[in-house]
Image (cartoon, rainbow, N blue to C red; front, side, top):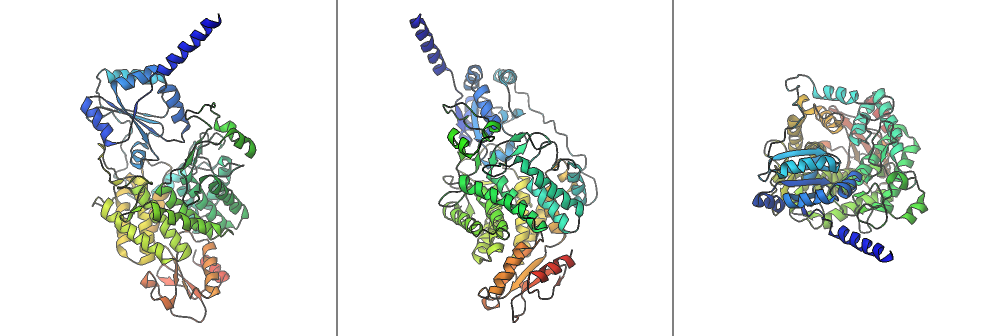
Length: 585
């Protein structure tokens, strides 16, 4: 009896060891070329390392012997890590992660699917295409019906995004994401006297506490349900950046210390789990413990994050993607620089500077920023736009001219390498091999870039940057262009508002050696004026970066608030600043 049991176990182990696994190729032109050369269809699995359902599909669907055997025999299978490859992220963002696309050998799309696919649903599709069906895929989304609609896109867009707002629970739509740009847009309206926008912004931020980690800090990715309690537990560095900027704005708007305490929790998480000793930040942490072939069974996020600090540490840490991408560094540079003005923690600005230094030392190449270390010669618009935002924010926070100089150089690089010559900018430049997919013009990245160009114009007075921002808006921000974006309209609305009226400027005139100049700079950093451009002018050092904003030398340092064609009288302290802000609302 004992011998029969042992023999059975040995046979079972042998069969398990022989079970086929999908032979994944990397996201590359060579992998697509293999499909064409062999006459095989291509399967692309777009996944994120932190994605719960990606892990489930890898284990259950692709881990099934029948699926794996069919894929290996009849397809060229490509695994696209969307964090490592921003062009894949942009290409498949409309179907999410996991996102599955099947191509004919000649590159035509045969089938696409959003999300997890059980074996029972996937096998018939794979068999049909493996047997030679090359029927083209037809997109189900209808074209916009608003192509000819007249009116103001800003007015139309605000009405559209407001229609998605959940008055009962806060946030937009049924699934609740922390949409930082929508909150920034509400704060912008609130600063102009819109009390409803102020309430909605603050209420949504308070509701977002339900998707934050009460033990380690940091915000999770989203809630699958409308009440903020069906949490998906991934933590993304990009979301931490947007959340920090929103919290800083909430404190400026209210003076409520709770918002600063919320920000301190996010900082604690970033420093403990994402920050690298030599500068820069990791990208993501998984929703669950396990799920990457580890010997221990998976512990789902809902169970893991219900544990306290020590219990979590005893169980182990979810997998962290420690790669330091330029996009992450740029967005966190901006967030930390904006937060430094309100957080009584001098390390915040130090962290922002160290992050910029890391990017400069390890990611800079030929005037642009690589996506990550070890990826030479490839430049993504996503990274350039985020780094431009970060450098400009650091300049305004520190008034260190080196950051502005880097930002100007980067903008010139973007124009030279990524412009399509028609007003928009391509997703990618360079690379040893071309992918057989179109080099697209990503909407979100172009909008972020346009806002960076507007900021650069405001800081330098160089009109060409505003003109380039306007060209992007003319291509993307028509009513027809905004239609179909649903609730994700914040960035576009901010761009339209900034083009409609140049942002106000606060110029501090006085030597930095005078402590009163430093006091004015600190007071301005705390002032609630969303979008205000901050410039320091030391008459002893020559003209300011924007030569239109020079002021006479005075006996004491002073600030001047300029906008709508006029400048204020000299403002000598925080009380003067607040009175002038209220007067101009």
